[in-house]
Length: 227
Image 1 (cartoon, helix red, strand yellow):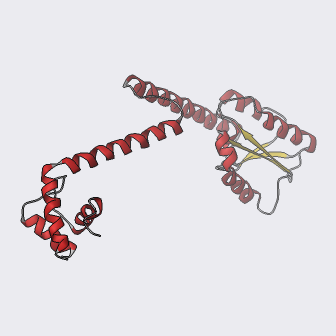
Image 2: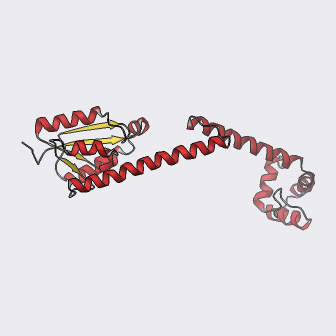
Image 3: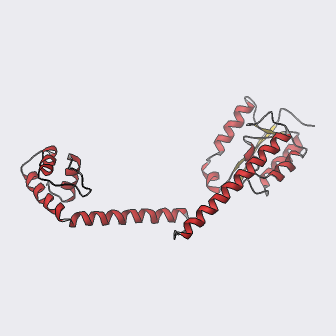
């Protein structure tokens, strides 16, 4: 016989990384706790699996415990159970009562509709991701481990910065500005006064802007103009 006062909690995250970090799990637990108020689930099952996949060993264990104890299966959000319409339909037709915290008053027809929308959104997202990756690949981007790509991204940025520093150092106008700045530093002038002098003499930064105290300070540090 169903026991309306007993619940078995089922939580799902899509990736192993989320499982290790707890990302998403704590939010689901909090939603379930708020829904149950002063009651506690008799057990909790955590699944690390995509919502599009139907092979759910932890869900099977949770449902089996519900059948043995007469407890209800409680899920924080409907898409945590499944994003597959056929799979959701099969679960709804089983002998276990399922409670969705984000949709507690929904009947089976409404759940079927929402599940169909969730499946459509999941398929649409997957399609867009594939299209974006194919578009990047066709433009010559290297696809692979995101962490490796991030390392390459940082290396590219550092190489670009080094090229810009070298160009700035070899720029004749910058060399003349540094020569003047060296004498201004020797006079003990303030950063503002040195910036004003450089601007009055017609010098510009490598980006074509007027000198400011902060840019003067950077030049002094870069070229070791002050002991």
